[in-house]
Amino acid sequence: MHFELGSLRFDLISDGLFELRPETFVKVTKGRNAELLDKTKFRPRIKVGFNSLLIRGEGQTVLIDPGTGDKERIAERRSYNLDWPRNLLPALRELGVRREQIDFVVLTHLHWDHAGACTTVGPGGQIEATFPKARYVLQQRELDGARAGVASGDDGYAADDFEPLAQAGKLDLISRDDHELLPWLTLHWSGGHSPGHLVARIGFPGEQKLMYLSDVLPTTAQLPLESGMSYDQNPAELTEAKRKFMTLAARERDIVVLVHAPRNRIGFLSETTPGTFRLEHLSP
Ligand SMILES: [Zn+2]
Image (cartoon, rainbow, N blue to C red; front, side, top):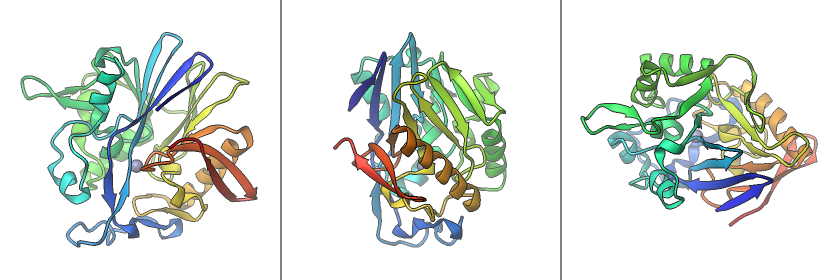
């Protein structure tokens, strides 16, 4: 689906479905739970989506969270029953967007389901940038956290998704909490789900904006401030980030994107009583 805000055109691209165990959706206060992430135990699954955002306008082409990508992902395909192949790269082709045309890839964080598509296997078998002319923009704290995660065996991160880009000098690392990437695109550190998790806000000053909350609010199941996922690394930080960004989105009537919603993927938030939010859906 696509829509416009002034001179900016947005395409919300579904990368495909995958499955999580219901217990993954937890009270945020429980935090990260290794038991729930034990993939050897089969449990019933729930379908979740993945929604990337393409923005074109003002002479720029920006992709936010390109998704899983086309590297093999044998373990993840088995564990999460990923729709395969993933849809982002074919969807870009259908939209007439060539990989060389992407100027910026914004990464809210480096988990494989969000950042796997940053790299691909080149003709000689080497892993290289999927979007050869793009700058890849992320928080310094996320790169540090992802490297620590890889070193400690956290399989939410895969070095192949970002180390080839670091080696090629393609990463733009943000060290401040708030960063203006373009006059109509700002990036805000949230933390919580991962150490350097970002929220992106798109739109011109004084005009309607869109907020890409990513895993601050992945689906409507996480609308209550105390609800999260078993993947969240810092529950207290996440609760604060939810309060801050959801309140802002509700007050400013931002269009919000739910990154893991399989349907009803965008809408408006409203705060019915302080700290209680609901979502008015905008799309099928
Ligand atoms: Zn996610």
